[in-house]
Image (tube, rainbow, N blue to C red):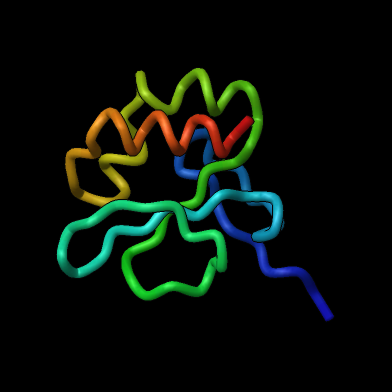
Length: 83
């Protein structure tokens, strides 16, 4: 059985789904980390690499991928998850 690959929205590398953090935007516009990787909503994946952590906020790649402005508190939680 092959491992599903997903693309990191920051570095654009294809990586195994299990090594990425999934962030979702629900229909209501709430943004959260999807620890199950199965929740309903628009998803974007970010790898746990140090380069991606540094570029995540500057590049605004996550905001573009989800088409929403992400509050700083949520971004801080995502950054903690990537450590």
